Image (cartoon, rainbow, N blue to C red; front, side):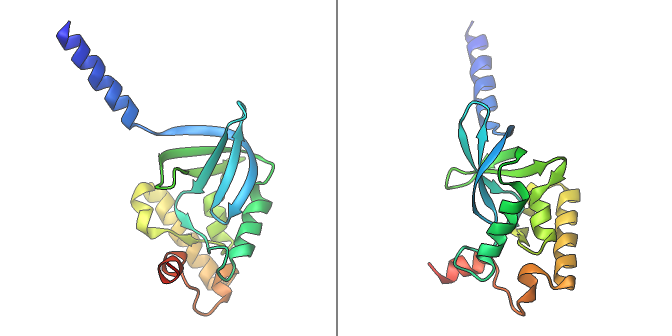
Length: 162
């Protein structure tokens, strides 16, 4: 009996440490170019931080355009969020998929976000390569944030404005 309890406890703690999952629902809010709110079928709201990207802050150059871009892509649409973790603010960090398309990657392609290389170890090699190529293509085309000669990455902007 003692061994069974230990096994059950070990299994329980292992399953609790896994936070991977999927959420499906309607996008009901867009806070900025990399954060949105999804309402699931049980009417629970989930704050989602888009994985693999970092978009300009609201007060930053292109911040509002990045938000508008994400809004046009997903607002009032049904999405699937594939996630592994939550961030320090309690937001779910995940890949947002709309009709089979990676919305996070789309923001990078449109020049509305950086590939967040600090966290690329959380992406598959294929995703990381695709995001890096998308950023390079947007830079080359000088679209979105890349119209600015020296765009300030959001992580540097946040540091400067603490």
